[in-house]
Amino acid sequence: MRRASPRPWQGEAVQITVWQGDITTLAVDAVVNAANEALRRGGGVCGAIFAAAGPELDAACAAVGHCATGDAVVTPGFGLPARFVVHTVGPVWHGGDRGEAELLASCYRRCLEVAAEAGARTIAFPAISTGIFGYPPDAAARVAVAALEAGATDLGERLDEAVLVAFDDVTARRYDALLGAR
Image 1 (cartoon, rainbow, N blue to C red):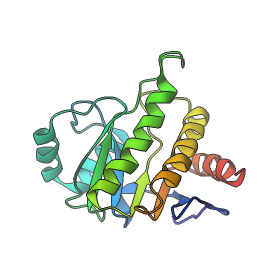
Image 2: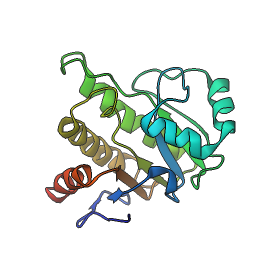
Image 3: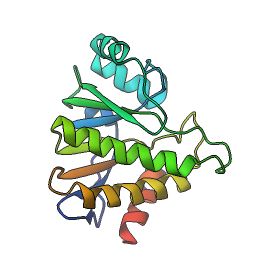
C-alpha cells in the first residue's frame, strides 16, 4: 500500500517520507535490515528481507561476519528491488537506562552514512528494534525521526530521500504525526 506522509519533512535536499507496506517491495537504492550481530537470517523484517533477497544474502552476510550494535554494514540487494541492503543492529530495550536511545540514533545515522558511501540516493528504514528487541514504538519513532532529520541535514548533497516504512497503520500514523509536527 503506497501512503506518503501528508507533509514530508525536507532537510537540505533529503526528503523524509512515510510509506506503509512491505519493505521488500520498495524500489529504492537501499533497504535497511534490522539485523542481529552475527548478520544471520532472523525473523520479522530480517527474515522477510533474507527470503526476498535469496540465498546469496546469507553468503554475503557470512562473509562480512559481524556488525556491532549501533553500527551498519552494506551488502548487495540480490533478489530485492533495492540494489543494497544496509544491515544495522539496534539495541535491545532494557528500560532506557543503558544507552538505548543513543545506540538507536547511531543505527539511523550509520545507515545513512553507509548507504551514501555505497552510492545510494534513496533508503528505506523499518522500525528498528521495535520487534523482538522490545523498544517501545513511540520512543523509537521519536529517535528515528530526530536522527533522520539530523542526518538529512548532514548528508543533503549525497541523499535524496529517506523513507520510514510502516508495516501497519498505527506505525504510519505515528510517523506522520512526528513529521507533521516539524
